[in-house]
Length: 126
Image (cartoon, rainbow, N blue to C red; front, side):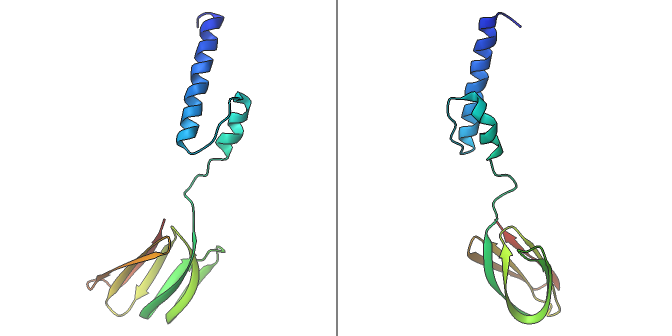
């Protein structure tokens, strides 16, 4: 493994690499190596979720989804307002023969239509 000086040089290089990697993840890292584990634990994982209140409109559709309180929701009506999480998957069964895919990105709603499907999925994306 080399001399003590080699080991210290390797440790210093590893510390510098770790500090740079943490900075790439948006973390502020000091010079004290023993603080690095807390900085690593502070990194958010799994994507950030945004709570969105959205008015759903459809002609005679059934919607199934888990709301922001982790409760299963099922609606059979033409319109309703619900708070959902960004990144949430919503399933809609529509009897009208017209599929509508709605993508919510932050507070922006983008819609696309497909006349060939009767069942469709609404994605509320990050």
